[in-house]
Figure 1 (tube, rainbow, N blue to C red):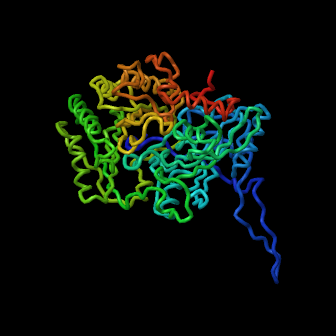
Figure 2: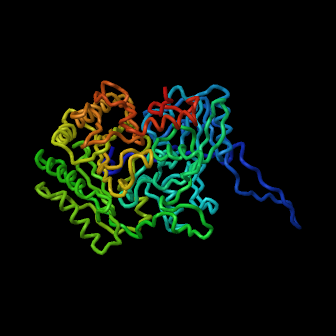
Figure 3: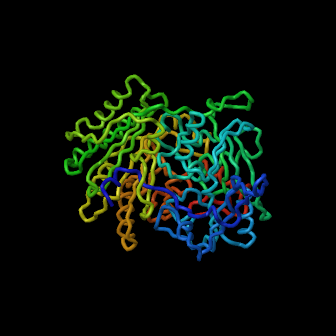
Length: 547
């Protein structure tokens, strides 16, 4: 693993699907006549359905996602191109009594899609259309679209965007219903705050698959299904095939609505900055000061009306074998004093540390280019990894900082790909209440992730042991997990960590369901009972049917 890897947010692209356009099931051409010959004009075909069996050369690619710890053994993978094809694929699996799972971008942290009991994987990655729906006055995005595609199409077509994640290869299919966030979230909120409607393939009590469209309209009989997709997590209630996006402040539909006003306009240009503090130059006291500064600054500057809402940063703390602690920042450059604010922020973090950071870069970049920039994106998807998340409502405690230093400087462990990532949060994320959407954590200031990446399967135990010990000590004050109190606020379902179910690793006394969903969990269970009464769509941390 190279040292540059520790400067980038981990996770990567989904599995490539080669040669699928030639597969059986594609629409054929149309024969037409002219004065000289009979020619075949190929129309834009509808993709799929394509069934990939274990003997197919494509099978190794489509049976796994970005985490090589988990390689599935399904009976087949069904690649789909339309909602109708998804309905048929689900019905076939249910009728045959086969366990089904769905994959869009392939960035699941656990074995929810690649588990040994999953017999059918429905891959919707080729369902990636993005368009404007004049009937609903919203932007229609198919659930297989990658975030990079979404940003590119929305911006080039209409000059707008949504505040989603910073890794362009992540699929919107699972990112959105989990409450995805990114570099514009402090300025505009979470991506779920812009969800107007969702199309979901469900299975009713009699075992019949069908699609349902649920909107946020107050009179919609399926509104609770919409609500469940604003943070309830992917793969819980059905298979989401399409999303419609528009700003939460837009109500009703009018034929005169200008699409360019229905979503936020991103900054035309942004400042990008990266600074490093070499581990070799940091004493424990200097490290403590840096982490104290970082936490206290965000505690003081994460209100919904903070001028720093236009800035996002991520502090990456690799194990000392990674070389340097790295701070990456993106700042809206439209303000007259944006560069001065950026410089003041970096200076505030370094105050009293006694070690000047090394400036790796500070440059002005067009916004769309920044969405493809390497500062927040991830490494090669041939790695194995494990991540463990937390929300921080206050600055880090002395116990937490001590746990960071002790585990990140251990000399009996070597892995440049072992790290802690701390992302700026708050701002407009906290505009909404904990019940307006299914995302219950609406007053946090930082989002934490402890992670390890490696390649050798024989080393799984070593890296998992280090990571679990680190996390347990980081949250020693609350039973080894981020408790629900004034300082911490549970866990983020998109960074799924099945360890939360283990009483030896979660000694908090707080059930995993509350760590992820807090008081919203019973409501999610009621949605589950209505739309997935047979529990067809389930995984290691799925919403359970009410007892």
